[in-house]
Length: 309
Length: 321
Image 1 (tube, rainbow over the protein chains, first blue to last red):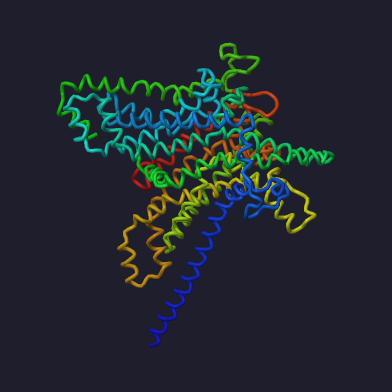
Image 2: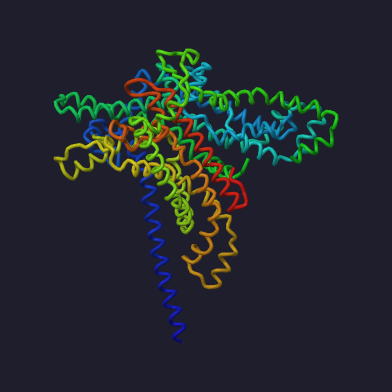
């Protein structure tokens, strides 16, 4: 009797603790999810609310006096359209080229290549060392890759990780599929484009989506290889965003340091806030749309990371 | 491996010719790999010459200076002070990441305890989103919230109308912690995914058996889930430790300001340090010195990888790389 009683009170205690634990976990995750999503929401409602209210700092949770002129006006800024095109070019071309090369090299490494083991290591080992920021810059500069669009494409062509995962995937394709085509007299390239590539679509999608996001988000290469050398014609959207934000930041710090600035000027300098937010939104929107659709492929990428080369 | 053996058996005659054809097809990209991944190592040579643009524009004109910069790094009062500061910042921020590397695992365990499937999915989608936006955007968000006319000040004004705006980004207070927090915001949800997958791989019968034996919820977590994730955690931990020095550049470059990037500033990691040496905001560029720092970083990084790989071989009987 007493023994049973003990068990029951123990069980009850356990279930109480368990329930408290559940509630706390829910609260924790709701809070963290809000912290993750609110900044995006906040920027979005600021871009569609009345600019005067935004400047006065009266927008918090919901948009007020909704308008979309920020989005139509933003492209009147001279630098915006070329930068948007540049981001688009590098993302599209970079994604196509790197994906193709990764799957192609992955395929060739499944074949009896001359010195295959050596060359495969030659590629894979580069994951584990790098010459460093500045030596890389100096060499790229010397081979004429700086102040050019190609610095966005060529250094991205060989990314060992994507070659490894492509090779791993292609190895899982039954060789019989390819053999039958070989009997029909297909060469290596034909068999790659006709058979292997179409069969590798799952890995192609995963690799492509990864590269596309990385290309779209890339920032310091623009700064280091082009802008630092005085070349502004290859500016991307990420760089334009950086420029707007960092410039206002320094301007505002100057205002703080120098209290004698005319209040009108402060007002003028504070106006770029909505410009910044709109640029930020334009930079984010493609990712916001692409990400939920391809979430499966994104998460597949990290699982592939567990595969060793 | 198997495929190649099979082909060897099937077509011994074509073998010798075909292997060259395949090599020929791969060769252009092997050359590209050499150009963009190996040739930059040749850039190390700049550390040993007085290359000094725009005065000395080519390596041929530059005088040989030997290990001067490597010695300066440790002995020259001005250089060494900055170098040690950068080293300290890198180690502290790297260390902070390592000692909190159990957070994603905890995240995964907790989210696994939730029963509402829809809720779980929404939380996962939302918390992994920051991983996919650029550091530029993270900085824009920081700006929109914490700058002088940002959300933080708006809220303070709401409570206290006479509040004078403060730019929370323009200082060097708690820089290490702030950088760590931004990283957690960006990566915590994402880093948890690997553990969430690992949890779903744990044998469900273990839980059943334990439940029959009367184990409660917390015992199941502590005695089954946590041990089941330990191997994954160990691998992640070792990879983190091996990449200890590679903090990346973008985050620190974006969040740097005149206060936190001074010679004693807390945001200056080794990467940012070399960047500012080569592309200073004012004054002369010093490419050879920046290269010397980069060389040291690379060599120590590879050594670290070897050591940790050795540890992995000993403890897991399996190599890390």
